[in-house]
Length: 488
Image (cartoon, rainbow, N blue to C red; front, side, top):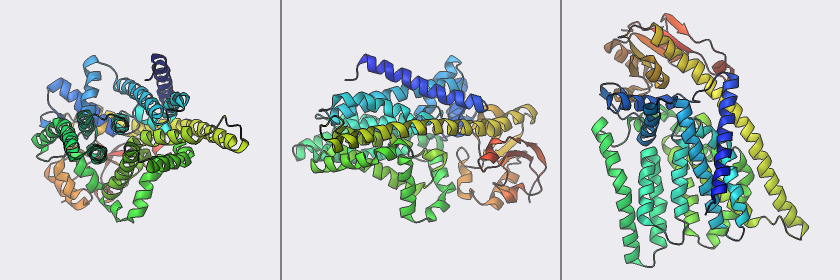
């Protein structure tokens, strides 16, 4: 059990870590979100509070939020009138605190002979740069990681709680659709560790009951909003990056797995292997299920959405469980107090290396977070504010990045990424078909990063260009608002 003092230390450490990232962003440009999708959640939250509709655009209910639960949590800030960045960062701090306490408890359970190591596992989680980035991102990523790790840690308990595990899997689904993958290893452990066929059947029935309690309403919500069982983003993202599935499967899988080891995960990799071997030899099925889940998650994205942009944010929910298992392996194998020189040196070297890598990547992560925020604020937010101040009130804007535009722009939108305009999904990368759609919808303004749609951009009058230095410095381009002229 994590003590109250440990909880307090974790909270202060998490608050300090997130504050450092936010202050670094403010020092470079200003505070904000490091990705445009965070503003999609804020737009759904605000519209839900103001109109009672689950809609990105008032009067048009839609299933464009991949994470309905996170959007609903964002509504709390809207009700209280708290700045969106402050509110979401506060929830990020609480989530990071809970994750640290969960990780400490997991290491204490996995390596009971070394209870003193558990506290430090929590601090490693708090200092891991992916997780701090996620805490300040305004996205559901970190909370999804907490729920996923919670499920997998529950599977290592001596007395598992099938109904509770099913509930957690269902809650995870409301955060991210891929959380359904948790059900496979969870069901396998519940069956394998049962004392017979009838107990196994009872466990699986209780697990299914808990899962269905959240799964059925989730599917029902999407069906009511869009006529599909999954959010429109589920289909749009896969269609947008379909070309990436042409790469060799092994290369795609390696890219997904590599995300987990860019940071302290690399220093813990040898110890992660130690933990896997130990779990396999002793048939600790709960731990093996956690390893299996990481592999299944990587395989899922390698097969359906093989992208690693924004620091691999789709794989970030797997980072906590990898760190927990890796740290458990370090605690299990390290002999820092051994009378023998070699075991003592190896153990201490492992600890020092992990600490050094953690610190270096924490600093690098702060710089990355600041750069990401600067790009979104100086491009998407700046263009959206310009449209709000200069476009006609009834203007129709076609855009690929709609988050900040939806929150700040105050204009009707045709979503060229298909997140809230599902009719776009079949023609996502067909510029001629998109031009026909934009003509038919009588679009007035076209907002895009320069060069993203060369055929659509050709010959259009430029009304506004951000001209900010941050995106070009990272190899990108500036955002431009064009006056749309009919192509046909």
